[in-house]
Image 1 (tube, helix red, strand yellow):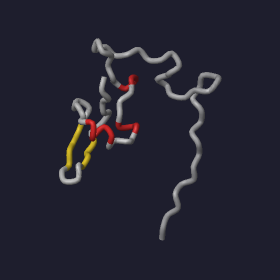
Image 2 (spheres, helix red, strand yellow):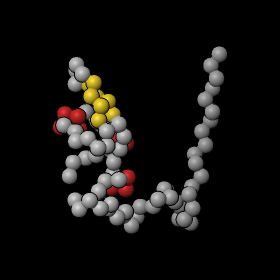
Image 3 (tube, helix red, strand yellow):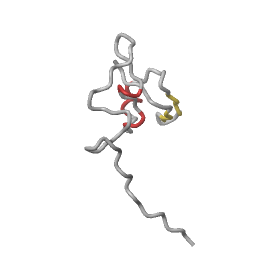
Length: 86
């Protein structure tokens, strides 16, 4: 099964701009030119099995994201606000 995009991407081949989306079959050169893992679908985001069915999520994965030992989501890391430039 070939990889599927999660979003639309635009690539150049040196002369032309090419647009590819989730429903497109990508040529090998385009697959190699997309290093960002967020551009690709994974099983939980919409890939389908060979029989066309949505795959079952792993037992360890959670739709709620990261959870701590108590089953609650951890507090987000606090970051200072960016400084205003004068």
